[in-house]
Amino acid sequence: MAFIKTGKTQVESLISFLRGKNRGISAPQAQALFGVKNLRARMSDLRELGYRVRTTINTEGRTTYFVSRRMIWQS
Image (cartoon, rainbow, N blue to C red; front, side, top):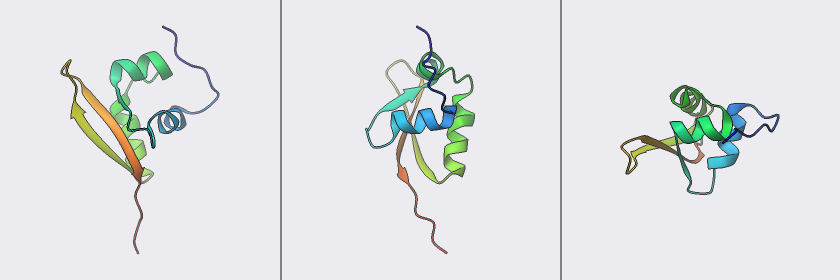
């Protein structure tokens, strides 16, 4: 399976795929779909952008990431 070439950055592709759909992604899925080799680093990027990232372990024992919504920063 070849990854999708959309012209978006990996972070933008992950946000589009995950946000608002209650959909999760594991490292092998991210590699296959978007060419992401270090999903953990991309999830750190999302956290820095203010997204709420949740992790679980799937039935195969792999870490799966979910993005629920953008956090509201309070001053």
